[in-house]
Image (cartoon, rainbow, N blue to C red; front, side, top):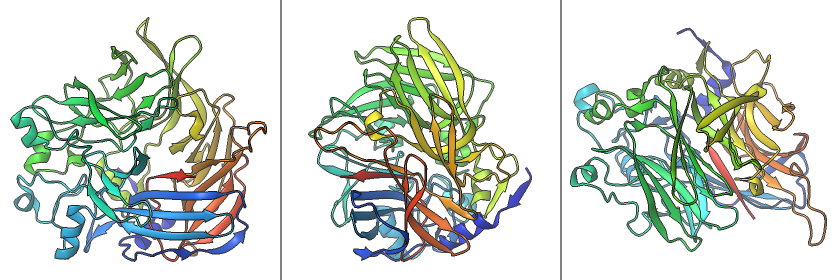
Length: 489
């Protein structure tokens, strides 16, 4: 597979091979523009804090230890703090000064001898965050969440909801997967406040398990649905009508090869594009529907809802194929395959009564890490913001900021050459009591941007409507752009 070196990507990877400093309450320098006085709150971001482990370059983008960055906005300044999540594995490796654990995409150095039957994988706690039920949690879909102190970001410890996330199935299942995975993309129902989440559990019987957590933080295992394979599923859709929608693609782990140490879990993944994708819909009454559609892989859904005619809508960023481990390893060397697959905006309509699935393209551009107005989750909506690549852009990098009107297909984008952006978090402008409700795109985007010419990472505030840059502030060090973030009022 032909690959090409891209200087911007190479510089970004080199600048973030190992991020070690942790800062406490540092005021960021304003380099450009002005902070909106009404922008008051806290941005939290989680992601891989480095791309290597004590001199060993990771093989996969998803493997670095989780590092949480906090940005506190008071309308005049932004203060910055960052902390690694002190997982048991992170603490042990820092103490030893070397890699001790296998991870999602990287085996230990030393081949089969070093990895044979090493079935304890590192919980990186590096993917996203959620604040719910009195807890701030750092999430990683392969294991337990980690509770954090919201003021200091100190790690309080592994969090299992009072034992609910301990495997309740057979003795052998508990040996294979003692802790139930808790996905990095939980959804809070817009009216009940109940948090819904899922995990895909490998065992003697592979299962899709569904959780519900009350606003008070009381959890229960609501469903355990059998799966024929150890399917890799990263995200799902929750609608205001109470439907949960899961796309189970024929992209599955070879559990025996991975557990034996012959390969990393990521490299063990088998893809069968000749097989259809199974769509599981769990209704608000617990009824389970199973539909099918043509192959396609989705890391992230944009949103979903029940339409006025009763059909379910699931908007996805759909890949034509799963990005294999070789592509991820090339990325971490500053290279990309010439035919690197990128995700496109696709709308699925599910008719449960007829058992049919239709799809349509929403835009002629590529994107990833989608965000919408937080009040529109599970409801009809109009706008989505992502990192992306407009049609005709000569580079295969998702190096633009994209705003998509899902009703008209209109695409707006912002671009600064030789830069890379993080997921844009949407901060709506809130109207005073009694004032008209602001438009859906009336607000701000806050995100990180790495500049290769400056070899520096900046915090950007932009207008959500037209993507215009409003303020640019300089971080005291480079940090990886990470994966997912959240805004707290």
